[in-house]
Image 1 (cartoon, one colour):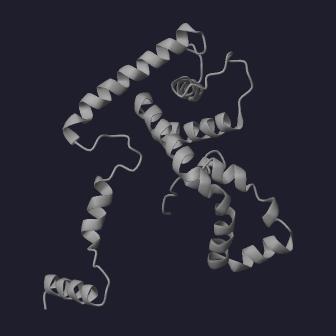
Image 2 (cartoon, helix red, strand yellow):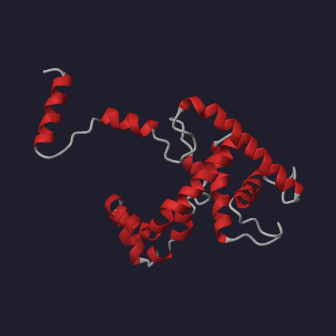
Image 3 (cartoon, rainbow, N blue to C red):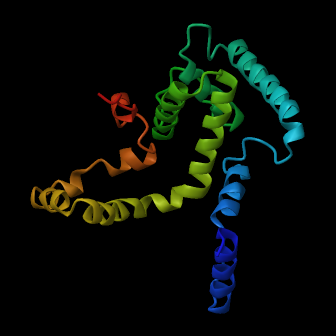
Length: 199
C-alpha cells in the first residue's frame, strides 16, 4: 500500500467513526498562511503598500511626539515606542515626567524583548503594538487561570520540584503576575533564551 492510499484509508475510517480527518500538512499550511497578530493584510500583493503606509504613520506619530517634546533624539527607542503607543491609543500623559503606570512597565518589558529580535524600528513598533493589543483584548481575561495551569504543568513535568516548592511555601510567592502579564519579557536572562553551541 502506498503512503497516499494509507492516508486516504485512515481519512475514510476516521470519518466513518465520527472523527473528521485533518491532514497535518494542510493544517500546517493554513496556520503558516494565517496572520495571528493581524500585522499584514491577507492579500500578499498589498503588503508593500501597507508597509509604506505604516512607515508614514510611524514617521507622523514620531514627528508629533518630537513637536510636543515628549521624545527627542536621545530618548531610548523602547520609550519612543511607548509614547507612540500611548499617543495612538489616547493615553499619552500630560507630561513625560508623570510616573509610569503598571501597563506602561509591561509595554516597556515587551518592547525591550522585541527590540532584541527585530532590527527595523518600524517593524518592531508594529509587532509590539499588535502583540500588546492582542494581549490586552484577547488574553487578559485568561491570565488569572495561568498560575493554576502552570502548577498542573509543573506537576506533570517535575512533580518533585512542585512538591518542594509547596513544602517551602514558595508556590504562593512565585511572581505569577510579573511572569504572565509580561509574557516573561524581562523576567528571564537573555542567556537562557540563546541557543548554546554544541561542544
